[in-house]
Length: 310
Ligand SMILES: Nc1ncnc2c1ncn2[C@@H]1O[C@H](COP(=O)(O)OP(=O)(O)OP(=O)(O)O)[C@@H](O)[C@H]1O
Image (tube, rainbow, N blue to C red; front, top):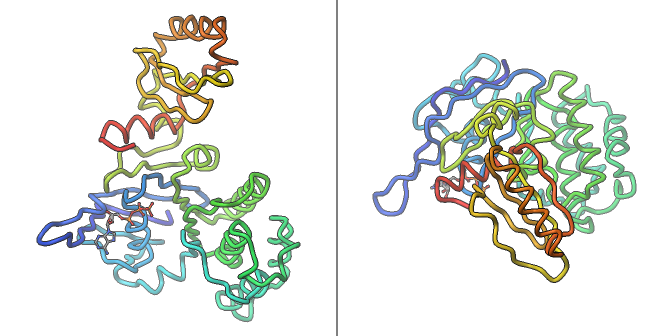
């Protein structure tokens, strides 16, 4: 096991005499070669947890062990075991991606550094065109990919990626996930911190949903989906010019984005829902509709909205 966390609690001083419980009794573990997704809204407590794994913050109570040793006892060791891609963009200044990634590689591996790995990474991510462009002239996505390469050029046993695909185009996102999978095939473990639940579902081996400092669900995507296993999701494409439609009264949760309407239902309501959808197609309200089993996103919305968040 690479990481074992038990009862991690972090309390900050809030305004006046109030307390802010950013992490509340969190227990989880990560195995070698596993991608662990940490999902949560803004302010859920993800960064606080990551900072404790890195030994940058001390838990108020609880314990985190990395490869069998307490982070509290040896925070410097924790930082050599982990490589991190932070959520905020790294200021590259005039450094080119090639220079920045090479520098990081030399710092981490010293004389063992293999410059060919920079070329391999840039090729795998189709970044060659920007390799020698000054950082300040790069697009947001190119900078994000450079930060990713800096995190994985000489990966630690645990790679922590905070929203690694923000601003990255869909094709390079796929390349990025291929690179991550290669890392995990070599035994590296990954923590993926994200709000992007749809992407996480495709990528992770196990996932935890963090909300207001607490884990609401944890397990493989199928285990987590099992918590609402009787549910189905309907996705509807609204006809042009129709921006609003009432969801059926039996819908459990709903989400409306532009011309797409999604909602979840109990599987016992499937016949009624299909009838409702067909009727709307006949009336010209819907272009099409589809029905599928619940996704992690449905679980996420259901669990977090129950607790008063959207
Ligand atoms: N040093 C601090 N002092 C007081 N409160 C803090 C401190 N750091 C974080 N918090 C609070 O703890 C809570 C969790 O913050 P955290 O940054 O861990 O959330 P997050 O899930 O990483 O959010 P985001 O997705 O926006 O990055 C928030 O309410 C935040 O305001």
